[in-house]
Length: 217
Image (cartoon, rainbow, N blue to C red; front, side, top):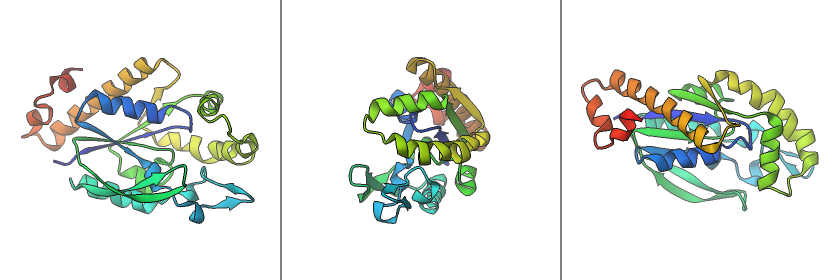
């Protein structure tokens, strides 16, 4: 069966990873694909002085991400890189299985035209930049604020925030985690029901078989 491919993006610190993890835990028909897997190794990443520019789209292997999504859309499992953030490099590969709903979560998802065109549904987790920064600093106490001022902040304004115009829907990420999960899940499942019925009308009932919570949540 052709899976539903969903893109979930937002600013660094918006809560994408937490939301993606919680959604994956709600049902075994949802599988999360973290697009951090497609970062370049540090040796290939663009630099400015001593800074590695991880917030620059040139630090990302978009074509590999496109190829992975194209294979998944055909219903094929793919080999994904295993990326170590502490080491800033790939450490191997892992098989990624196809499930009815593939939730892709990442920072650059809507920046690249070909990549964003592969998502059936594009969701933007919306929080004010100041809130996103505060959350980022709470989990990364050693965040270089000079880097933020010169690199990360300007790229947010010129690259990342403008990419939200490509989202089909924005989710208010300032509410409680429970409320954010509930709205996002309802949005996904409503879209998934229409998607399955339109794409596979004869097999639509089996899409939800054994999981009435998906059909009626």
